[in-house]
Length: 120
Image 1 (tube, rainbow, N blue to C red):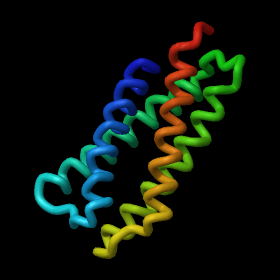
Image 2 (image 1 turned 120 degrees about the vertical axis):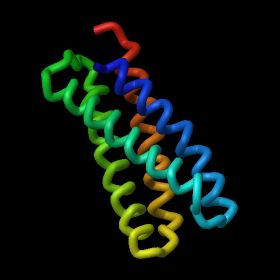
Image 3 (image 1 turned 30 degrees about the vertical axis):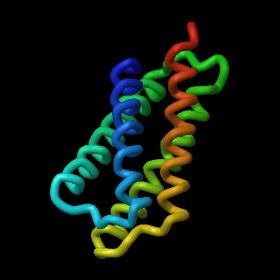
């Protein structure tokens, strides 16, 4: 299950990079890009829930990297909720919120990668 979370979140990070190009070009997300954005969110939530389940089951976490990754991913999901709320209101999400969401997501994925590849 940890491997599935690792790969799902890896794909999520890659798709998020593509979506960020639309944001930086100040292009409104329409059509196919909107569905890519929805897929990004679904993959991110699914991968996070899988990882949270692994941590809740009691995976060995001697180094504490699992707890750090969990905290960073919770922050990422909070930022994602703010972005979705702005989109539902048909407003452009704040650049600060998008930057925090992306930074926490990439940091959480890097820590998760270190946790997943460290022999326990």
